[in-house]
Image 1 (cartoon, one colour):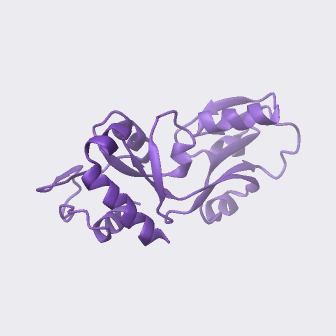
Image 2 (cartoon, rainbow, N blue to C red):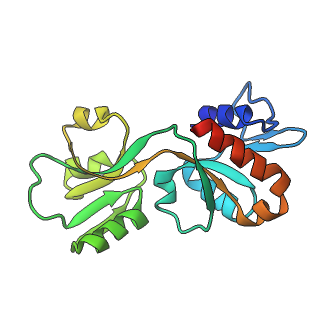
Amino acid sequence: MFQEAYRALKEAGLPLPPVEGERVLLFQGEEVALLELRNKDVPVYVDLGIADAGVVGKDVLLDTDRDLYEPVDLGFGACRLSLIRHPSSTGPIRRIATKYPRFTQRVVRERGWAADVVELSGNIELAALTGLADAVVDVVQTGATLRAAGLLEVEVLAHSTARLVVNRQALKLKRALLKPLIQRLRERSR
C-alpha cells in the first residue's frame, strides 16, 4: 500500500521526498516528511498529531476508536473483512479469533451472539484449523490463502479500500496545504 499511496500523493502534487534505496522509516523532504508505518499505527500517529495526514485501510479504521477526518476513499488496496470457518465447523460460534477485536466485538454484539473474541496477531487462519476458535474474522483479498488452508469465507462483513485520514487540528492549522490536497485526491479517485 505504501507505493500506491506514495504515487497517489505525488500525483496530487504533494512535494514528497524520494523513497529510493534501503528501507528507511522517515524520509525527510524540504517541505514534507514521509513516515513508513505499520497500518495499525497510522491512526495513532495522525490522531496524536505526529503526522498531519496518513493513508490507511478502512479495515483498520473500522477497528480503531481514534477521532480522524476521513475525506477521501483512494480506491486502491481493496479487500474485505470476512467471517471464516472450517467446513466441518457447523455448530454455534462460541469463540472468534481476529486481528480486529473492536470491529468483531461490534459484530458479535449487533448479532446477539454469545461468542468470545480472541485477539491474535499472527496467522489467524491457524485458529480455525487448530480448533482455537470456531470462526475467524480476517482480511481477504483474493481468497487464495483460505482455499490453500481449506477454509470457507462464510460471510463478507465489510469492504475496505485505502483512505486518506487527516488530523482535525492540522486541517484547521494547515488548511492551505491540506484542503487542495484533499480536493486533488478526490478528483483523482473519481
